[in-house]
Amino acid sequence: MSGDLKPHDEKSLSESIKMAGAWNAPLVVRGAGSKSQIGRPNGYATSVTTQRMRGVSIYEPTELVIGALPGTALSEINETLASRNQMLPFEPMDYRALLGGDHEPTIGGIAAGNVSGPRRVMAGACRDSLIGIRLVNGRGDIVKSGGRVMKNVTGLDLVKLNCGAWGTFGVFSEVIFKVLPKPESTSSLVLRGLNDATAIAALTAAMGSPFSVSAAAHLPKEVVSEPLTIVRVEGFESSVIYRCGEIAKLWRPYGDADLLEETVGTDVWSDVRDARWLVDPAESAIWRLSLAPSKAPGVIDHIKRVLDARHFYDWGGSLVWLAVNASEDAGSTVVRNAMRGLGGHATLLRASPQVRSTVDVFEPLSPALTELTRRIKFAFDPDRILNFGRMYSGI
Image 1: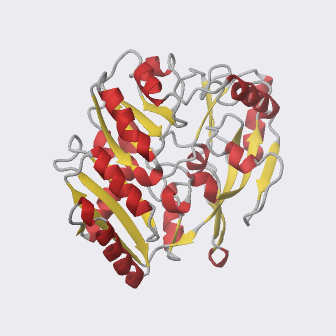
Image 2: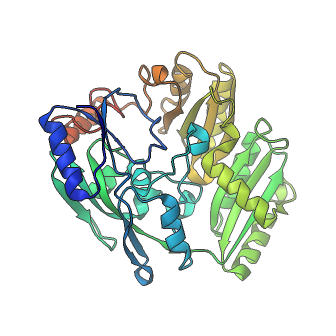
């Protein structure tokens, strides 16, 4: 059994997975393929793609809820929401610049990867907006969890469990999100010339203030001509003007803050979201580090003492983006040693298939979590049909 299975609805998706199970043919699960380079390569000959499962299934603007089939392009979701001046709160990243290719991201892939962006500091990650799913597990069973409203959950939360599981437990057939109105006004404040430690202190001060920062970033000299430390403020125009003025006062110990022009500010945040400063050279390995703000400069210093690397901070997303020169392990030993004991995690987002097959791509699990994850995988996918080994070897 080889080639692509292209179901057009939930029933045919279920039949495709059942057929793969009967043939004992493990499947590569994908949407449009914009994130197919993330994770461990498995080399399976057969894939199941949700590209033909398209369309907005529900949209209730007054209830701030939208649902769609998994192959629906993110652009269609955004256009539908924009027609009512609404948006996905979590500002999902577009990986095409970083990973190459021209396949437009799909809403199912966004949910499968828990793909989020700089607004995470205010609105949470993708999984915080995902309130309902339908999926097909490795047995071909159709499973529903959640709905059209936020609920308190007891027991196993299947919505949160499958958001970020990269299709290893099931294949989405529908996803439902809470949405938000678009802000009336947006402004970005910038400080220039700060080093990493001072910039982190300035960003921490702004984010800890009562002035509702919706994104924060620091771009060191190695990725821009002059170091830039930036925050974004969104909301009603009068409120944005007031809050920007208060943050500028708060920042006086660090320098004079300037307002970015609106078009420049928009471009900066899309570039932060998509990690565009690290796109070239294409052969460099890309890491995404998540850790406490106070620890980040020390971790970067540790890594740079050993590796030739470039970095920037998406501090609204609690992230450090890191590009290292290509090597046989993509700097894995150095990066993981630098992160050890800090309570954060590191994900290798871009490297050659050879490297990704030999190092831990996602943060290694403890023995207890490895066993728990293995048991959950067996419960959802006992025959190991769906994306087996993509996140962790043997799971």
